[in-house]
Amino acid sequence: FLGNPNPKAKAKVDAQREKADAAVQQLEVLVRKLNLNPPELAVLRDLLSDKSTIRSEVDRTNGSRAFSYYSQVNQIAIETAIGLKTYVKNSELASDLSIAFLYAQYKERLGQLRGKINGTLAKQELNAATRNELNFYVQQIDLIGRRLLAQLTGDNLANYQQAMQSDISLNVDKITDKLLGTNSPDFNTLPKSSVWFSSATQQIGLVKKLLDEQWRKTIQQGDEINSDIDNEILSSLIFFFVMCAAIVMLNWHLVSTLKYEIDILSQSLRRI
Image (cartoon, rainbow, N blue to C red; front, side):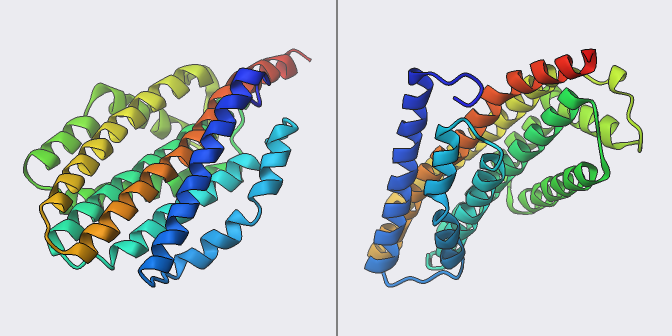
């Protein structure tokens, strides 16, 4: 929408907003009904108080704060859901939820890395602040990956390792390492931002597939549990988390539509 404002794109954004609002409403119903009070909820509520302002800026095709804002909302929403997981008493179900949340965090960090490297390649510039931010994302991705390796077993572990050792993932890692491996990267030896974006998106797709499968297993496991309170929290958590994915997708949509505009602008600047 930001890169090419038109009624069709605006309608998609509005639909995503409705889903995001539904997620927040479902969360509020959950915490009131079950008398829950995860500490992350206060932070999320504070962030969401700026929602109308950010949306108004986006409606005026001003997305300067949108990327950072939605990234924060995504992260706190995930952490809020993780906090709610502590109310699930069944150990096996709690473990399944923990793995699902790790995959969600993994996907979120990959999305942040994708967007930041996309802008860096488009501008062909890597300053100290951006390098530090990228290194932070890489460290977080590595940490989450280690946690997944420690918790996954059997076919789940094999599927994760297969995704991370695929040509797609290895190519993304190679580009990232090449960009951050020197203080003065040679952008002539690095791919165009559009090529990077496509490769990184494919890797995120692999993680999304693992996340979707983990949610399927978690739902199936929940159906087999007889504890009413566990099932009630589980069903509400899953609905809330699925709705949170809408917020993530909105952030991805903003990055996708703007990347072409960034490329064109960068090329124009280099010709001046």
